[in-house]
Image (tube, rainbow, N blue to C red; front, side, top):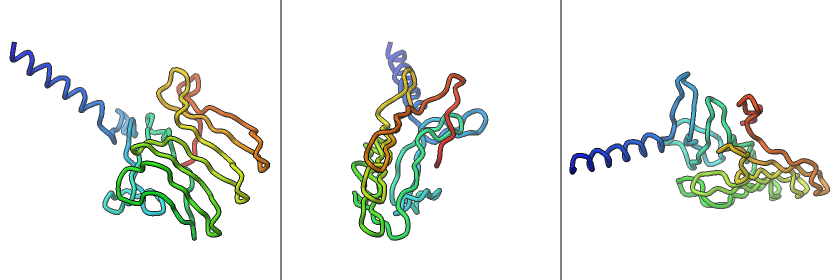
Length: 171
């Protein structure tokens, strides 16, 4: 009976370990599943974790980055938020060289929650809501697009299509 208990514990631990790993490749050598992304102080992607200031998670579906990060920062831009080396957690605001709000990114334990991008005039341009999933799919999001007067002009879910393909994405 003791042997059966030890074997069961081992199998549960092994299964948990296998399914919780990050940075895995599929059978074709493409990124698949949960991946850690390393970012420098300006949120530019770096491959060397020792040069990273921040970390976040993203998910790949057989080579397609499901949660790409759009452009952040730029020359003269300033970041407001927790700057300790760790997984992004909380609200991060980017301000342009003139001190105007450019974007607000919200993370929870390294996972994207939302991103809002603003026109130079201060009005909301786009809102990506990563808490809204596509029906029957574990990933996806909804983007809300506004005109310069603040009117909502488009609401669009981003999901796999009927053939299992993701739309072309930036980042």
